[in-house]
Image (tube, rainbow, N blue to C red):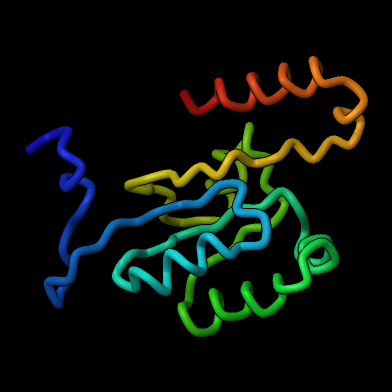
Length: 134
């Protein structure tokens, strides 16, 4: 049934239910990894982060282990340096197959430390970020 939540699913050769997801703003990648562990039949086709790999590992103590498991055990992709307001540019450049069934939006941060000085400016920038998705 079109519009039904189940319509995002399709079957693979082994008749397992699949859909391709992309996560946005997953911080330390724990959401993407938890999703993959809980639902191995889901393809977390890409996990996107604003930070570089080295910045991620400096910021989150578990990030090295988490990203390694996603990449090596689950064969899932992590794309670093993604500005969530310009996601199509990075995904198109890094992916031959850029179609996803679902975007899992984790309210990514803007990565702008100057925003801490002004709550109003912070809210305005997040509004702009969200407007790109809805």
